[in-house]
Length: 91
Picture 1: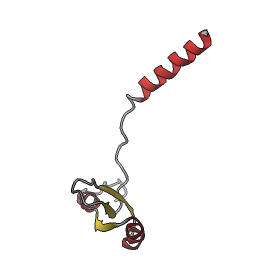
Picture 2: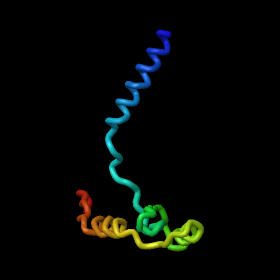
Picture 3: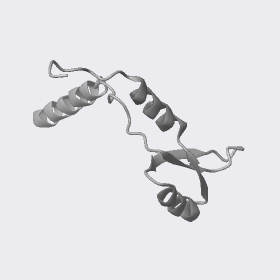
Picture 4: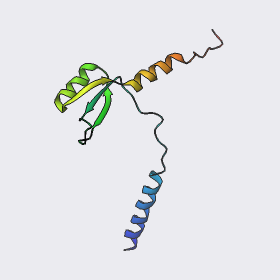
């Protein structure tokens, strides 16, 4: 019985520690999203994990969704373009 209590305490400690894990730096964003559902009481979901419009549409057709450009991805690309390049001493 004592081994069970130790294992239970260890599992509880591990669960508590994992709840304090820092969030990921940033989620990977891709240029195309599938929007599922109508949002009118039936709920909706969004998946922005598609690298091409064709890939997005293949998933959307099978799941009853529609594709749209990921505005967060476009914003991320624009921010990357705005950052000045770091110069090295050789430049």
